[in-house]
Length: 492
Image (cartoon, rainbow, N blue to C red; front, side, top):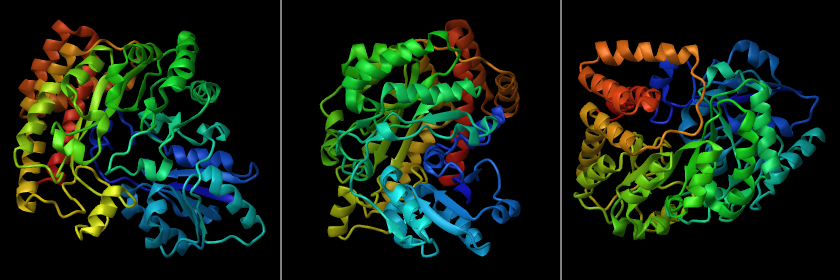
């Protein structure tokens, strides 16, 4: 069997970093981990070809070569997914679909031959068995959660590393918390399931052997969901593993309670973690109560964020506007909070209700749903009818985004962060592309940009005050360029 593993294109979004990636001549942030893992579960004799539409086109030669198309996608890739399915059908390819988009919205895709939903460790084997018998059903699903210590190592050799800025690895699935708007527990459960340290080291060895020395993103929705095994097994193993390694800094997603555990923060720093994403959501206590964000309540959130920063980890933050408890005062409060926190990469979106969440079901009963969500966190849309007047909400949201990513405020926030940040433990080798990125930033941001004065102020301030953080400061300047492009095109 000749199999095309197809990953549809992401639109130009906050997290695509498309405008920033141009500075280092990369096409996408990272390859599709789900498809690479599924590839390792397919029969060894099957021929496999990865087609990531974020780095190259799906060609006629691909479609003539393939017999089956395996498509995985997330909600934001919905439009490209529909186009891919239509093209595959034109060429007579059997289409098999899985991943988060199809698990929640499979009824929207009439042209798909077979759906392999939920986690592939459980649903792919029976599909493959039935396919061999020529008796495959249309839908394979499961409400159980597999033991991911049986999950195979992704097929890294299918990837052309030169196109990507980071590589993805997964340690755990599931989250112990129960935020009303989040679909992670719906898809992956409350009990965090973890891989063994040996599994993770095998995956890292595979990447290292193939020459990867850049950033590795642990795609877990909450890496610290199982603190005991993380502290006692994985982190010590990572610290030991990297003693003779060059590069390979780590980033991940965690919850704010990381700030409560000095030992855990020290271990993560020693292991090479330098960036963490946290769902901060809002500084408003009533809104945190409303969405059941218990882990964020009754805290000095800014103090917690700065504590993590001082332990050598940049905090990226997710924020939400549009809770029922929100009043028009929330717009300026969000701006003030983010500026004081030094969270440079602040993703602020309107509240959306993913299918299957408790929020979705509550608003459905209240008659307050407006269809399905876009999947783009910062496009200014929502699929709910908010309590706040919609015009006031949109106007206020636009004001927040424009304020946060105005050059003066953005560069001020970068400096606020750099004052607190402890230099990373791991120094990733600077290659020729990064030197070129510096010169591109000087030309694009330091010469051509009308707000170039802020670039040069940060440039020289960092060289004089925090020279070890100079590459990070330039990276932030480039990120700011990307964020401004996104804001200008999605929120006119």
